[in-house]
Image 1 (cartoon, one colour):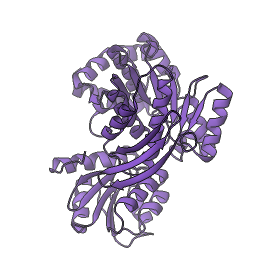
Image 2: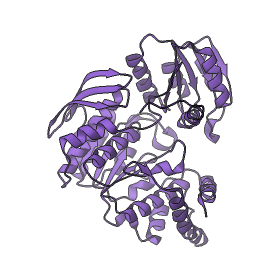
Image 3: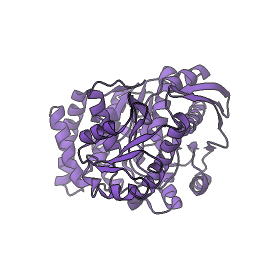
Length: 436
């Protein structure tokens, strides 16, 4: 298969849906020689929000320290190759095609022998283990796909677990209370491993209990490791972190939003834990790595006149963080909001957070079969704003929003990673430059 054929093949696997469990991935990996057990040093990263940003920061710091760092993340914005990175560089499309060509006979033989067919994400996970083990990366940052306990990444013999936070999301799969969701996320905790978490409240209680039962040392962000804001601007933010092994003064990151300081503190907690296992990572590597870290689609300034900001917030907590970032960085500006959400998300709660006070709302349809009755969001938004527009095509929605916005206004695009991906692609294709 070439790359386009490989992507068509992968898309065809989505018919197997989300089918949680470890039996299929374990069998597939067995047939591949168990590449996940090949000596990879794995940091397993779960949580509701912040996984991608924390992974990007960790990758940048470890790279600055001289290590060869693999990162497996999902979903992607523009290309499937974004899911597999080594030192910030995406896997080559031809390599993806070759690996899927290698995997395909094993998938077909499993089906022929009566096994359930692996899902698209399981195949992608197996590909990750195969790729990174052959590339002999020094560390693999492995992001959980959904939940934790029976997510396909949880076959990994990780050396350290990270749970960024616990909030309401994916309730149909994970449970309808914070405690239920936290219990699933805590499933990535293995006996004796260090655990770093920024969870609070009931979620933290569940994680603390799991660590106590499994004999794990727990590093709590906000308690054992703290941070103090220093300054912020549209170009980034400065803050200081008090870790367990040092004080890191006046750190800088490009990523906007108070929540990114918590993610940076989480990354420092992980880095300090890795130094206990032999990693050599200086304070300067931490400083330089954090300053270099970037992840697209997170409170990203991507256009000017009007100033255009995109953010992948797709749940209530993410919406609150984005709203706070807008208030912190751009107080008093009128906002034109382009929003589209999937049908299985908390549309009413997100609308309640993001819509009040905005100048106008353009509701559009994310490019996903899960968009469902996308117009329902317009009804919900209408409770909080007078000027509501429905434009199904994302490109036309952006044009409508641009026409509604004055040069000094903010144009904000959010609600779904699928929407952000399409909007970002269209904006960049139109000639705008991203801010890095």
